[in-house]
Amino acid sequence: MTKTNIPEKGAIIQRDMETFSISPHIPGGFASPALLRKIADVAEKYGAQFVKLTGAQRIAIIGIREEDLDKAWSEFTDKSKAIGLTIRSIQICPGTRACKKAKQDSPGLGFALDTEFYGKPAPAKFKMGVAGCPNCCSDSWMKDIGFFGTDTGFVAVAGGKGGGTPRSGREIAHDLTQEQAVALARKIIAFYRENGKFPERLGATIDRVGFDVFVRAVT
Image (cartoon, rainbow, N blue to C red):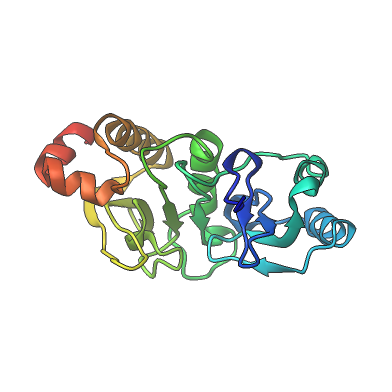
């Protein structure tokens, strides 16, 4: 029998169709030295082929056998997983906590979004990015929901995606505080859950129902 992804175990089948990768939750890619050591220890203990920094600001442990998946996950304090039809890891730049160009505290907003939404169900995979300035190092324009900082607050964009048919998001709100940005994300996700149809991403849902209808519903 051909093996496939095992979403409930946070496991993605690899090219050999025998082993899996797992990606411990690292909010925004901000990892403590202790977590980095734990990832290395787990990779060695369960015979992983290698670890890989991902575009989603995580570290994938690649080459875990199926019978070791539960044991590998048990090594981590945070066992939350997000593959399949879920809200994925939120991409976050360093913001005003480190970057000299930042206008806003992108980690503050990103962590708040992560706490409320990471791993929750969605009609299709759903991605968010938060940047501290208009340079958008977190690819805010290419996410289902993106935010970037300006001198006067966060700008919100919606409907973007990468992949084989990339599209840029569209601006829907300006000058948002962190609390307002989280509230807006809450409305957008609720709208998508009510109106989205698998396998369409949020941008396709917006196209189907109409951009003006979408904006009136969430702002």
